[in-house]
Amino acid sequence: MWHGRFPSGNVRFYYRPKGHRGIAMPDLPPDDPVFLNAYAKAAGVRPRHPSRVDSIASGVELYEASDQFRVLAQGTRDARRRMLDDVAERYGHASRCDLAPKHITKDLSGFSAHARNNRLKMWRGFCKWMVEQDDLPRDPSDGLKKSPTTKSDGHVPWSHDEIEAFCAHWPLGSVERLAFELIYWTGARVSDAVHLGPGNVEREGWMTFRQQKTGGEVWIPFNRELPEFAEPAGPDLALLKQAIHARNERQMTFLHTQKGTSRSSKAVSQWFAAKARKAGEASRTAHGLRKARAKGLAEMGGSAPQIGAWTGHESLKEIERYIKDFSKRRALSRAKEEHEVPTSTNKFQIEGKSGA
Image (cartoon, rainbow, N blue to C red; front, top):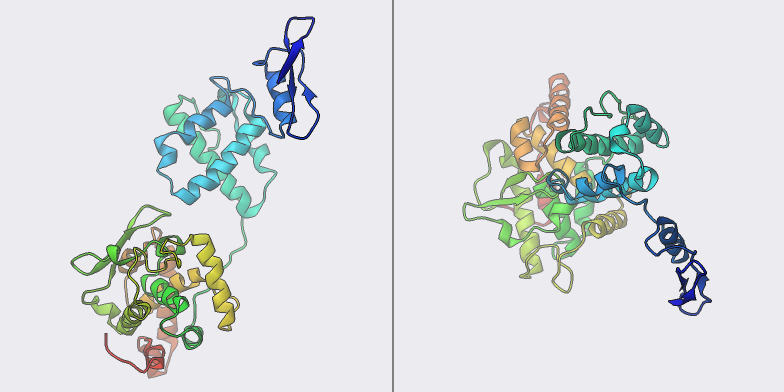
């Protein structure tokens, strides 16, 4: 609100939150940066630096609106946008042309390990765009190296015993069991599994979808003959179909809410981990089922490209490691049964049914 004028002729403005006394704004025009900062401070908003045409802040705005940024997966865009907005907040007033490796190095010094590497990925994407689309003469992120990180298996693949324990605890007909069977058979990330439904099964019997994270297409046998190497996994597919039929529901997605809407991937990840704990598997996750499927296909004799087409892995390094590990175990094993392909027969017999 305003009340009168200053001797300078500028209008006296006050910011007056509901139920509080008014806060006087400075003796300046309302479009002055100092006035705007004062207004934002009174409103509890952290102001951005005014964006000059050549500023880093304006570059961030242009990059976030670019095709190069918009083709990134939604989760990647969200994470990168938070980092880019932080960069605009910290350094937005600086000129893009003055950006040098030392500036990025100093920014990265506030982070460590994976957080630093993720921040470096953001800088590389932003700098690449500035070179290609913004006529930046050189890439200031060139030559900057990733931080060494401790090697970790992360999400651990489920063992056969853990799979049997979960299935014994959560029977067919439960949504917990349906979630398990769907993720285990498809090897899908939770971000994709929550969107899968009858509409993803095409006429030729493939279950197909485009991945949220990478944009790549995945093709999984569903209502068709399995590839020869995957035939031992037939009981797993039969159990998924039984789990779907046991729910006897017709909705757009298999893992829908009680209202028929799709679940959020974050909520399902946390929910599934809690259900695994109830089944006695405290450290197992939905993503571990994805790894278990890739590992299982490798142990059945699938090649890296075959497994990658099923699971949607763009990098085949992890799959090749599963294949190599199993080959080593088999080469050193004397027991005949350890040379044979492991199957889900025991899990299948829990239900007292057979067939595909």
